[in-house]
Length: 87
Image (cartoon, rainbow, N blue to C red; front, side, top):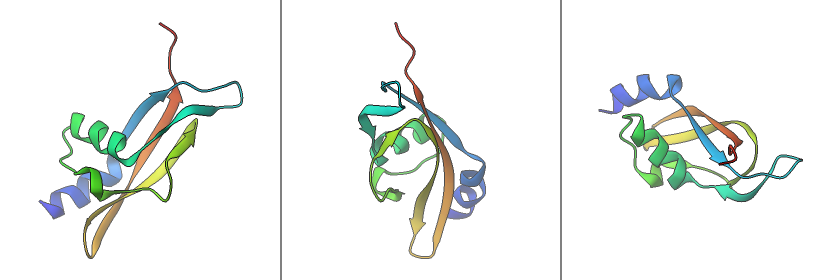
């Protein structure tokens, strides 16, 4: 499974919508758990604790986020944080 994930994760990317002000600062933040859930929705079997963020993402942008598979294996995924569309 780790080899499969190590191959799959660098090509994976997720998009998470959030409400932000005009400067692009989110009213909330994006957590590792949200990123893990978005990856699982795309069929990538990761646990919340495997997504490593130094701190929650608090602005609109594209971020490289480390996913720690086990002691010696980690991979990076692209996380796109975008402005939530008005309803």
